[in-house]
Length: 79
Image: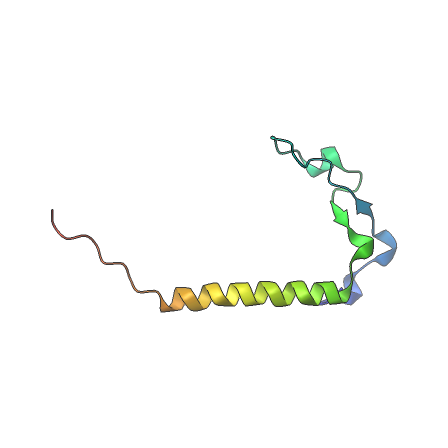
């Protein structure tokens, strides 16, 4: 909705509750939903998407900046 609004098919949005919270095992989406997705798509907005993109880009940028500044590890000396 934020990055590619022309690709959103609003007539096909469905809300599917997650029926697996608290369960131990992982279950295939096809086995636990009618649509194959979980969430409240009808509540989504382009603004929600913008906020999520901003958050993810900021987090990823911080990781890359840290990685670029990281010194090569020094191997241990002879014992």
